[in-house]
Image 1 (cartoon, each protein chain N blue to C red):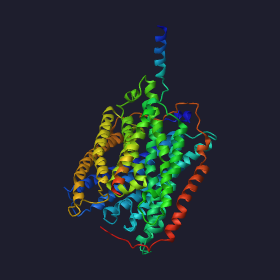
Image 2: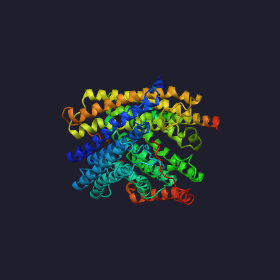
Image 3: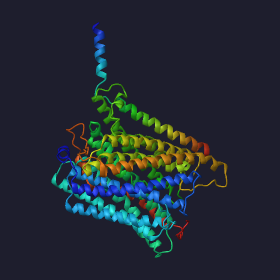
Image 4: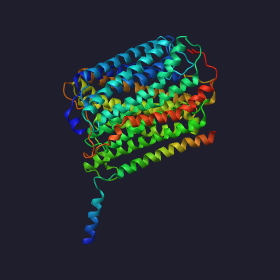
Length: 49
Length: 552
C-alpha cells in the first residue's frame, strides 16, 4: 500500500511547472517539417536535372 | 530596464502624432497597393482584362512598390519611433524634428515615384532591375524614401543614445535596443541600393551616361534586397518577443536570448545577397557557396526565436495549470485579437521559413528560381507573418496613440480579419507554390504560351490565386475599416502599450550586447570578406554595359 502512494506522488512531480516538454515537441515538429519539405523539393531536383 | 518600462506607460502625445502620420501613409499604401494586387490576380486568371490601356506591369510595379517598400517602411518607422518613445522616454524636440524631416522626405519621395508609376513612366517592377529603364524622377523619389528613412531612423538612435548616456552601465530597454538594431541593419543595407541608384541608375536615366553595368547593379540591389526582408521581419519579432508575452499575461523567456538573436540577425542577414543570384552568370560559384553558408547561419537565430516563443507559451500555460505535452496550447487567449492575429503570423512562418531554406539551397534554387513559388514564399513571409503581426500591433497601438479603446466589436472584427487573411493566403500562396513547382513563371502577365501543354496546366492554379486574391482584398477592406475606426471613431479611453518583462527578473543582459564598435566591426569584416573579391571580379571581367530598355 505504501508503495502505491509513493508512485502517485512521483507522477504529480513530473507535471512540473517549469517543464518544457511541449516546447521540445514543438521544435522537433518544426525540424521534421523543414526536413520533409526540403527532401520533397530535393526529390523534384533529382528527378528533373 | 523593467523599472523604466513601468515608469513610462504612455507614448508622449507629440511622438504619437508623428507615429500616426507614418501609419496614415502606410494604410493609404495598403489600400491602393491591395487593389493593384487584386487586379493582378484577376488578370492572371485569364478572365479579365485591364481597362483604359493600363498595363499589367504598371500595376505590378505599383503593388510591389506600395506594399513592399512604402507600407513596410512607413509602418516600421512609425512603430519603432513609438516603441523607443514608450521604453526609452519621450523624444527630445531635436529628435522629433529629425523624425518629421525624415517623414516628409519619405512622403515626398513616395509621391514622386508613385506619380511616375501612374504616368506609366516606371513599369520596372519593385526590384527595378537594369537594363529596364524608368524615368529619372522614379529613381530620385526612391532616393528620397531611402535617405528620408535614414533621417527618420536617426531620431530613434538619438533617443537611444540619450538613454544610454543617462544610464551608464545599464542594458537599454529591450524594445529600444531591438528598434536600434533594425535601424542600423537598415542603414547598412540601404548603402547598396543607394550606391546603385546614385552612381548608376540616376546618371543613366538622366542621359549623363549611355550604358549601365547590369551585374554590378543587381549585386548592389541584392546586397540590400535580402536584409530588406529582415528589416520587415524584425519589427514583427519585436512584437513576438517583447509584446506578446505581456498580452497573454506571461513573461519573456529570456531577455538576453532575444538580444543575442537580434545581433545574429544583424550580422548574418547582410553578407548573403548572392543566394538571390545563384543562377546569375558572372559570379564565382565559390563565393556563392560562401554566402549560402552565411545564409544558413540565419537559421540559428530563427530557431532560437521559435524555441523562445514556444517556451513563453508553455510556461504561461503551465502557470495556469495546463498539463500534458500540449495542454498549454489550449489556455492561450484565443479571443484576444492582439494575440491571435500575430499568432497566425507566427504559424505562417513555419512553412515560410521551410520554403526559405529550400530557396537558399543551390540545387533546389534551380527548381524554383524565377517561378511563382518565390512569389508564394514572400507572400507567406512578408504578406502573412509580417503583415498580420503589423495588423495585430495596430489594434492596440493606434488606439493607444489616439487616446481611444479597442472595443469588443473591433476586437472580434480583427479576429475575423485575420482568419479571412489566412484563408485567402492559403488559396493564393498555396497555389503559387504548387504552380511554381510545375514551372509557372513569376513576374508575368497572363499567357497560354502558344497553348503549350505545360502552360495550360498552370491555369487552374492561377484561378485559385484570383479566388485567394479576392478573399485577401476583403481582408484589406476589413483592416481599413478597423484602422479608420481606431483612428477616428472608437470611444475615448486608455489602451495599453504592452511591454513584456523577463521571466527571471534577476537576469541582466550582458553589456557586450550594446558594444556597437564590436558588432559593427564584425559586420563590416563579414561584408568585406563576402563581397570584396567577387566584386572586383565582377568589375574587372565586366561585359560591355547595356543601353536602357523600355518594354512597356
